[in-house]
Length: 391
Image 1 (cartoon, rainbow, N blue to C red):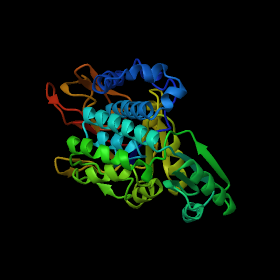
Image 2: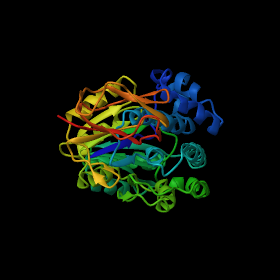
Image 3: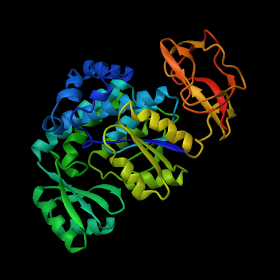
């Protein structure tokens, strides 16, 4: 099985939009700018590290960047069995699965970022990564500090983030070193995220989440709060609200996906932090991160080289593990390419037809079994076009 994972705040970097400026997925930036009433293109192209460090800029740009990558990957016809996102990335995951519309997601992310920024201003705090110490011992360090400090992220074995008042984080870090931590590293953030310090932001966000009214999804999203898969839209109102002041149980999310049969993890968006966490947490995990258009070809090769994807349903029938669906990269009228017929062997990247101006390229190599869409049919995004049997 395949999972898409989406990074959170801290993965942003100057110029991360430049590789995408001439790509068709860049159209999302204009849409995000209109909804957010912000110049997202300028932030993605020209903002320096200091400007991007602002929570309001970091969250919006990371969210939009990750969805640009997702849009490009969906055009290849690659789909996940599960999605998950780290902190902010959970909003990206919900947008990826359709629980949130793109416009709704942009508005929610802007409201969340502004609320967290204000909470951090009113109640200053900081965060630090504790490396080389068990989860339980890090929690002990926070209790022994006898101050406002808590575990904020369970990221991976031996990698835990603490947060709270500056004095509390320093005190807990000192105790953690006494208990055997290899390193305690301060993080360049503007608040104590995922702690009680964010309670004012949580109260403010509840209304915005309720207005977005998350929908049910076919692809489950693993929640940061309880590390369980959810496809019921109603549950996300409380889960997203709780997430702001609860620890991110990312390690537990990864272990849940492993229990569900996931061993292939694709990180979509800037950075590659989640890829490292998956390797540390899941035995035998196959991982890849995609942040630029140039890495899309590597993703196709990676998918083809790996274990079969989860069986995909179409009209009630299962395609077996040696079979693959090629899906539409866009909505519009489908026109097949002449000369390709049932039984032909095709390579990765072979053009099977066009939907409007978009080419339908196969992300797989194999033998064409049949076209599912017919000439002149109006298809929707990700509607099956053809199916193959791999060799």
